[in-house]
Image 1 (cartoon, rainbow over the protein chains, first blue to last red):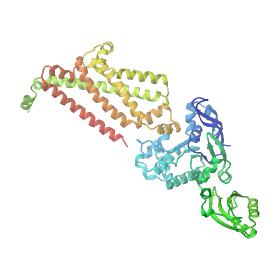
Image 2 (spheres, helix red, strand yellow):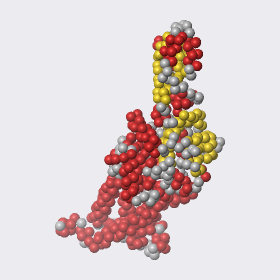
Image 3 (cartoon, rainbow over the protein chains, first blue to last red):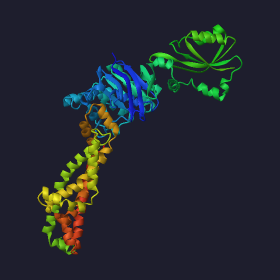
Image 4 (cartoon, rainbow over the protein chains, first blue to last red):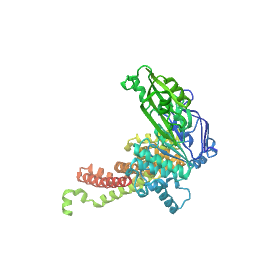
Length: 344
Length: 225
């Protein structure tokens, strides 16, 4: 049972012929409790797509179903009720400047029939959850960016939603603050089981908290899957270029192109990029081939990361010896992807 | 004191009761037309913002009609507007002179002006706030009331202050066509070369404007966070 189901969703701004096709035939199913990342460069349609989930943008085609109820066929009054279950946080925080932190958090609670005392208690509890218990009386203008986003998260959780949509929620924050906000979202996800959709253009964000990821390009979802699989086995150029932004293994291409002496190879030597696509990074494959095939392996770069609890990464090495070809064959057998970048 | 005043503003001191009457009439015009203008201007301003393309109650027709009507009345110089409105005043209020007769022209002068002030204050509200409220399930009315109006209080207060000051100017002009008040007093006697009367009126109006401006600034400041 998926909590969010987008089926063949398209959104065109303007006319069908001359308009902008922001989202084109996207089908995504998101399971309860999942943190689902949608990554793409600006203009890829990801912000429009996330607004199709709560129908802030009405899809021009397709259906949107959240928590078993099809939003795309609802009248506006009914839709507004459903939206209380789908909260959203924004890049620019969007706190009400004329209201205090406590009043901002209480904003969605108005008209829910909650008494003044119950509202105050709930606000207090939420501010403690986001670690800002002493800021209740402050105005947003007195807070830092990270604190503003924490208040926005508290406000988003006030209506006890099933889904939290994060639209570039950390893009306006510095790296440390980004980390703390992502940790907070992860904690809340683990504590409450809320389903989270994260829109971002930073692979680091996806790597940090997402279980699954969809890659968007030109309004289409071009690749989708568990974060580890997508990182380990990127199929599309756009995905590879995102992964390159978080790894230094692609630097070798620049070095080779520049003819750097670091990668100068003699006859019989090769420069190769090894990618550990299965979770076998910990095995001693390098010393293994070195012993078995009597080759020298000199590591130029290496980059191993923990993604979704599993090690993933690779290295760039210069391999030399008489039995290089055999060594490569052996590595392939062991599910290590070998890319020969340069031969001497 | 009285002697001193007698020496510098003899023509005012010779008719203090008339001056007092003029002050009272000006205050009456302000106190009656300001609250009505505030309400009507607010309603029109909110209507324009709500109905404009992309607004929460988008309605091209209403937005166009209301906008054009506002522009029409704003483009008529007040002194002409006051004369044109005499007939309507007679029809609605029953008279076209005195304080009562001035109300209709004053409303037509200030309401469109204040409506544009309200519109401009509300347009300053970030679209992000409106989107956030919509994402929380707020209705269009909720958004107008709890986001647009609430967040534009400082701007509306500033616009209201400007409108009130220009309303004082309008009451003086209305005086010229028989509405009474300070404007009438100044024109009646000032034109007879009793310049001290004109100067006294200017000083009284200056004091009123200063008080209104200071109060407006203070309220706007308090409402800004």
